[in-house]
Length: 292
Image (tube, rainbow, N blue to C red):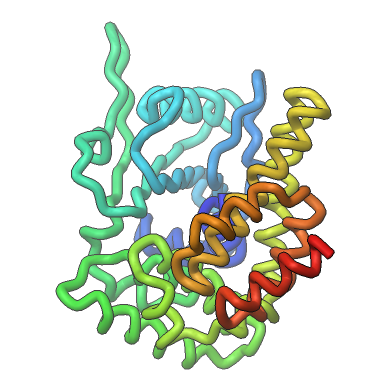
């Protein structure tokens, strides 16, 4: 969920960068469409409408190739709904983020009797990082691109981030870069090149966190209030554990068991303070204050 919200933020804030990279087009008159499509609602990761070109760019980001329903069928479903609603050219691009040998990341069409639907597939780990290094909105994705020296690439991205002049933009791109780099880099290496303080200070980090919590709660509400509270708690628990792991490294089983017992409110409180932790001892002290 963290990655989904990070990429949604990047596409909505820097649509020109994605359009230039994927369509080789310079378009400035861009409308961001709502991601919920009509009929029985489904959500696409990102839908960008190029008004001047009468074209829709539909981006679908996938961390893992597994999908229910299968991704090719989903892409056909998205296309039909978009075409029915907007009746214009639609360019669909699936971007796989995390390296895998699964055959699913090489599938670029849906095929059934009398029906074939094609879309573009990009395996980001196969892409040249140079075009991604040219635009602020694409810098976080550059950490996942092709390289013979991952550490050098991460350092190069960090240098480009540091050269962004506008402070708020630099901070937001730094946060998004750290979050996406976590797909392939160890937290210790990320900390060598990018300021962890940006995470705590950044408005976009808090926005991503709160949106992720809201989505978890909303899904839960649809299944009933009781189940919703638990699903929201589990969603927050997973997020907190991921953030703690990036901050402190692996968390021992005893501490993980204690985290499992925390309420949703306690987990939300922990999510606000954990970026101040420097060691497991800080986490233990915080948990002791809860018990007392």
